[in-house]
Image: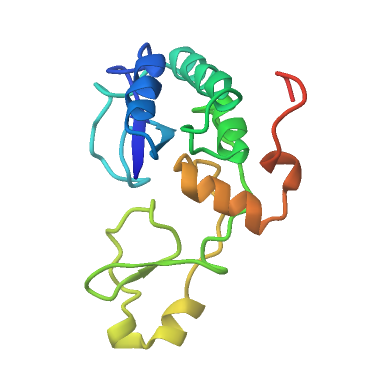
Length: 172
């Protein structure tokens, strides 16, 4: 069993309790990632009531890192935990979006990243064909990747082993 926990105003001070709850499940893990104003970049949805300030978020992730060294229930890899240390500052990753991964929505529209705005519907695989739609994908690196699994996959794709290992010191 796997839980995904979005860290925001509602729970930044409750990381220890969240870990204990998941430990009680037995064979479960929990993946942490920061709350964002909107899932889709460029969207005008306002979720600021859920987004914690930068220092509170970073403090919560320092706590997650502390637990990662002591328990098996923290499912984040070190790449995402180290990446989240600078949230919400721009932090480019070796991005695989549009190169080896893409997102296909239920209507057949292909996007280079699952976190970009879905307003442009022109890259439709049904109308264009999969090959053409894939060739039309941008290969951009936005610096705003905060989904734990995407961040970890991108660091692996970019062969950034230095990020995938636990830091030797806190400031690494």
